[in-house]
Image (tube, rainbow, N blue to C red; front, side, top):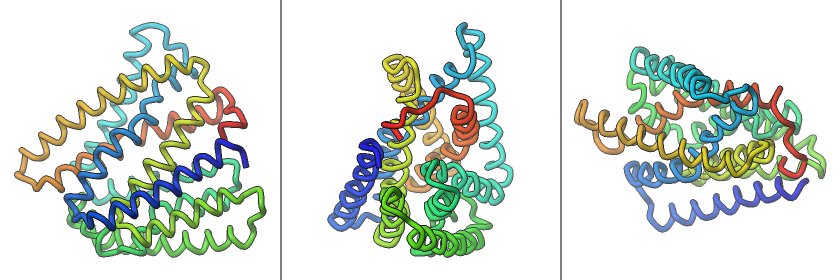
Length: 294
């Protein structure tokens, strides 16, 4: 286990403990959880996606404004297409989002073997649905009202599969994969102890985003420039998210928690598609990630 990997595992476990203490102290309802989730995603989650432009510049010669404009047009066009799908068919859009999220999250265990990747990706989205099915159904009802219960039940079944895969990992693990096993067990403990939204804070913000950010930054040739661009992109994304929240809140008089969750999850769903495609291309053909960052 490298120092960087041990640090990432430690951040996740410490984050789980911190979020659990916060939940115990505040016992927040759905709105309170949403108000914790939103800034956590903004501060800890968005910056890892904001490295997409530096990743693209490492892959292609985006040396002119016209080159960068074409990249942004393609990137935002894909995101807009996903958002349109949510507007036209929220049920299928939610199913697709969950499926490609599991595939994307499996990349957190790249290099640990296919079993570990499958166990992590499926558990990351399925564990909270299995341990808190009613709460997940209530959240999905704000995103896809007509299909919320069926999707939550199907996702809980995926959670069972994820648990079986994790047990298989435990049975075949060796000392070199201690961090993998620890993270998988941490996911299930967090999913069992925490409400789904606070579990998402711990996993998405303090494992997935931290790992992706560290690995990507280590592979980029111009790290100071990448950090500067990531800051700018995060600010632009937050501005767009604020505008989307205002539009959703004013459009139908939705409650604040509904508007926050719709902004967060539909926004993440839309941005994850171009982000995921870019990450996969970068992993296959981009600069090699140094071993100490893995």
